Length: 332
Ligand SMILES: [Fe+2]
Image (cartoon, rainbow, N blue to C red; front, side, top):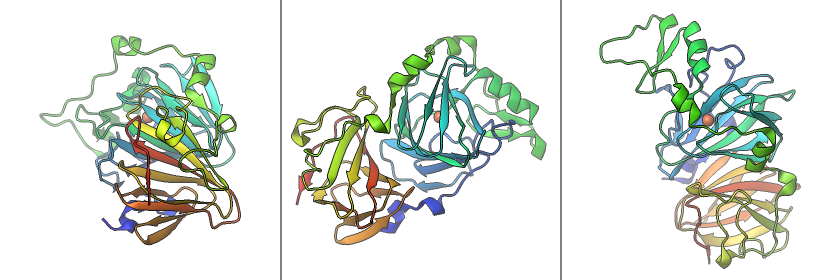
């Protein structure tokens, strides 16, 4: 796989506007969904998957204009959001009434499978969320019961195989097709009640990042690193993530001042880099690419990689790797 096949530029993201059952529901009909790495949980088989290589997790995105909602749902695996742009309200509970936290650019929230969640762009402009969903096959979305009713009012029926039947387009149920049963009260009861105070405990705000300049990657000047998800790494002098429970993947952030760089090293896991702000030149086995805000790049296992900030402003990237405790890098 060539380097460019591992790169998804923000401006090249191909949105799906009909990814989910709530695509026509008022307030949710302007959502853009993205499957950047892996198929995620999209209900529309036509949605474009930018990179199909299995990583042990899926990377996706959601872009929504002001007041646009993503309906209440839960997943079978962990779902983590990094706010790239915008101001977002994340609401918990089957009716979105248990709790609420407001997140802004750089903040992170991790939602376990036991929490119903939905989110709204409560800012003034378009906002983009970067999303990580656990495992190669994260299964189907479990929608709150009312989401089925509202969708049906707008002609959409979710089928058991995860696809959507569009009655407004003249589609009718054929033999062998079964509608997904409306989520039952027993399924709802398996979820936790999470009030606003408890919801704050699944959030890491960027102002609370426990940055360190003494980790394996950050020993050179102007570099800092923090673990957000994942256990401590003694070999890397890195304390465990603030949200330390097992996710099946780890998430760290790396900050580079103008001119700073991390020397070439190898990793034994998939490593996905997402640029939050500034620009980062990544060198991979003798080639290099300039990554800009919103760009995603997945570095080949065992490839040599280096990071340099050649721009004039601070650069922050988020790094996702397979496993809760990635191995220490081998510097070259
Ligand atoms: Fe989700």
